[in-house]
Amino acid sequence: MITTKRVYEELEKEKLIDSVIGKGCFVSGANQEFIREQRLKRIEEKMLDILREGKEVGMSAQDVIRHFTMLVEEEHI
Image 1 (tube, rainbow, N blue to C red):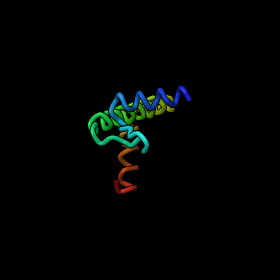
Image 2 (cartoon, rainbow, N blue to C red; image 1 turned 135 degrees about the vertical axis):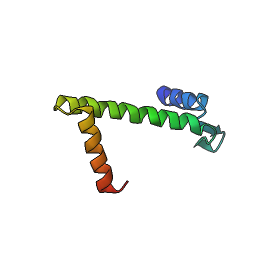
Image 3 (cartoon, one colour; image 1 turned 90 degrees about the vertical axis):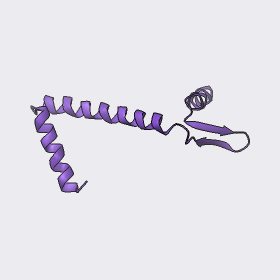
């Protein structure tokens, strides 16, 4: 219970949610740029993980990029 309450307080402090007494908590639309930056950080972390794992199997950064480009083209993204 205490952990959940703390998480909600943290989310509210970071303006990610709005609390309405008697109605609940709702995702805030006020801080879209912050949310975008957080998501970009997570993407960068995943990309670094991929580069590290590629290195472990003998792939260079260019090999990883070529492989990623191939996947993008196959999926038409």
